[in-house]
Image (cartoon, rainbow, N blue to C red):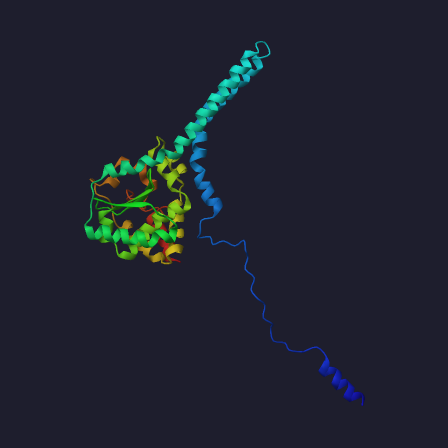
Length: 300
């Protein structure tokens, strides 16, 4: 009788099923792909020009602050010096705001300068090919109001720069004629990725400002071409297209008569797809070198 009771108690006890139970996955709401521009990254790029302008104005700001403080101290003897100091501070603040706003718009003149540097190139078929690629990629990157231009130049390169009404995309005739469709798509995607990262303003201002090479590179953001490759490759899901374009750039050295062998290109280099088109030897310690960028994409 006791054995029967033990048997019943075992049957009615907890299940001994040892198979793993299903656990619903929980997504981390804070996770963000490293290949997508973050808000902080875009904000840092957006404030780069303003920070640069503030540094340019720093000596004047210090001088005005010293004068205003001296006038305030002098107001102990003559009260009207305090009013003069206040007036000086207000005038300087208004001028500072106007100057900073001018810096934000300074890069918009680059589009007309690039257009003036070249003759129109390419065939009607080339222009249709380029505009079709742009129409396909624009929504992917959230970019519109882009004017396209094929410029007469055998060298391989492209640039996207702001203008007064939107953006202007300049692509060399040599690139459009020689690149495979997937390579052309990769170049255009790279240019659009720069806009998505918020790089165009800081890079265009670096191109039109009177700066040393080191200061120009710092304002434009060294390593940003590499970063734009990452964002572009993740968006189009074909890194080898961009890698193939970079390999073509790697194998070509500009002729002596090429725009990419001129001082103007050296000043504008940070706005172009191949920022070192005039480099005779590769430098794998430089993130913006085309060979290093190609190697990184080929390893994806």
